[in-house]
Amino acid sequence: MDVIEEFLNKASTSNKIKASDFFKSEEHTVTCMLYNELPEITPLNLKKFWVDVLKEYGDYFILDFNLVDWRHLAFKNSSDKEYAKINQEANEKIAERDEIDEFFNSGLTQIPFNIDILSLQNQFNNERKKLERCNNIHEQDYVYYGILDFVSKMNNKKTMILLSNDYDKWNEELTGLSSQYTNEFDPMKAHKYVKEIVSGTLLAKSKLNEKKAKRNLDKSDLDYVWKKKALRIIKLQRHRINDDLTLENEYSFMIDYFSKLLTSIFYLKKELWKFKWGEAKLNASKEEENLAKFDNENRSVGPSIDAILASKIIGLDFLVVEISGPMLKEDYVHYLKDRLKIAKSLKHVFKSILRQKLIVSSVKNLRLYGIQVYKNIIYLYSLSMPIMNLFCFVKVMEFKIPLQASLFSKELPHYFKELIKMLGYVLHGYRELEEYMTSHEDYDSDESHNSSNTLSPPYVSPVKAGMKRKK
Image 1 (cartoon, rainbow, N blue to C red):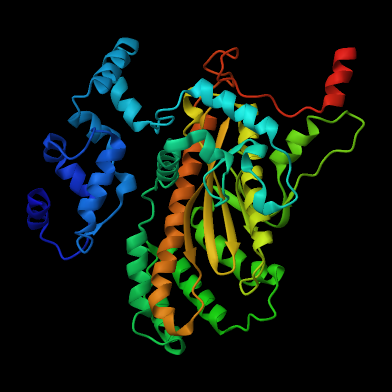
Image 2 (cartoon, rainbow, N blue to C red):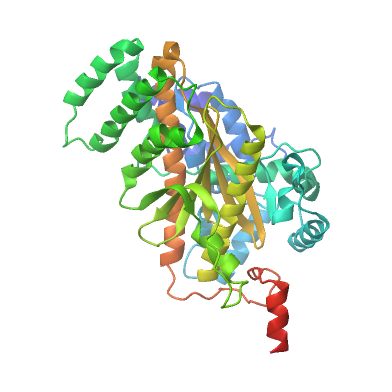
């Protein structure tokens, strides 16, 4: 494509260029194109078009599509009456500022697409009432727990039935929003640094390169902290590959390896949060269960979670971690149960946040995260609420933990890059939560509590409710 060729000629660099920089530089050209092959100029269609185009130039670009403001580009290009109507209505509501820019950059989504919200909420509640708790975890539907499920592969799951033809659109939109990345750390830079240390070396010789890189560390370097953590993870992974894992259990895996790995990555921002390890108790779940108890009843301590990431600043549990057995042990039932446990736990945390503060116009921007390890794969999940009372659980990413000595130099740079990306996704979600909790003085909803969007109340037992009525 001519616009890409011209841009690359002007850039004249041997390094890969961020796709987001291309769209900033060539915004006028991109927004003036006709796109005759597209049925409609929407953010989703525009993104799919450019993803296909730039994949052919993968050797020249870093494909950071999540950093591109597709809504802004679609709006500038489109002559569609719908966008014109949005523009008109927004300017009528807010005369003193450009509401359209805020709309397309505030994290609002195209959800619910072609589905009527009220109808969806009613169908969701009706389907949930019909479901029962299932002893076979393979057949347990997440809608029973009040969650739309975009993760499990179960046949005839209620989420697919409820969303019908729009299921894939919801999944893509939710995953994309959960993959927004803070630019505080550069995954490609991290990949390059680790590759320079381990590339072309055997596992036995890696230690010499690590020592050399450690001597070259400079505290005045802006990247000093994460480079130091990178060396720590290289060493950890080298020892891991040399270890005998046949006798390892879940507890030793967590203590000897995974806790060290996650703290090395997440403590790059240790001023923001801290880990609680070893079957920690989830405060939000404990809080919700205790709301349903009489004063003289024993308090619930909450479910046990392998690890919890808690904010130092706003005092909230924010991310949960479940380790589904040691790496060499296959236990799919354990994996399914832990995945469901993550979804339920994140919903408890989300509802706890909303009991403290409900700003309806901003709540759809909130995302909580969960990490699961099963065998040699790390999964990152996200829970959000794009529509009131509809919690959505999606898989954001998955990547393998390197195990083979022969592939050490090839797999480790990619592994560290994915860890940095995971940190970036979680950090972006945390920033949204921190802003939500600190940006408003009051704790009242900005919409009527009598509207159909009102959050459902916390669980209260029928016995307790009956006693209150008697009083």
